[in-house]
Amino acid sequence: MEEWNGKALARADLATGVVIAALGLAVVVISAGMPTFVERNVNPLTAPGIFPAVIGAALLLCGAILTIRSARKHGAEGEARTASAGAGRIATTLVLMLIAVALVGRIDFRLVSGGFTLAFAAFFLDWRITGQALVRKLLAVAFIVLITGLLIPALFETVFLVRLP
Image 1 (tube, rainbow, N blue to C red):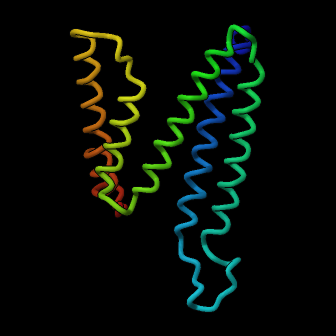
Image 2: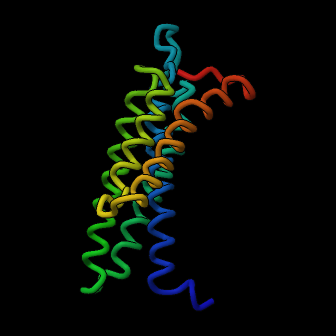
Image 3: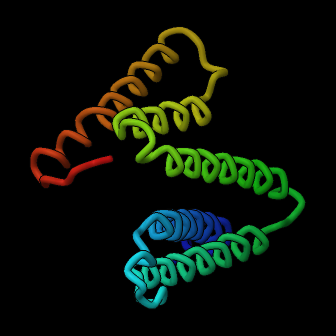
């Protein structure tokens, strides 16, 4: 498979590493909020959040290693600018995710999910375009924000019977 060598493989590894690291970080953060049962005088190592935190930390570590390795693999002069731009976008995505995770439970979930989607789209939208192309993209963003902010939480609450924070 010629298409899966060189830059394509490095990009696939980079994307996979970022997703795995983000998933691991989310698991660690969420498991830290789980009850510890300290008030019941039980061993703290039996808390329900210990095992998910260990798995999340392992995912975070493996994702970070894969991301760093794939970013370094093709660090030639011509790709250095692309890699640094990609690293900035990855960092911005992680910051946005951390903010969203920190806000879950503090404000309505619909606002968190819609706000994250809006901020993510605003950051990654190509603002150099103008006219009807920009209007079409902004309408698409508004539609996606509506779906993530209203319809997806409604689906989880009414169909899957999951109580969202």
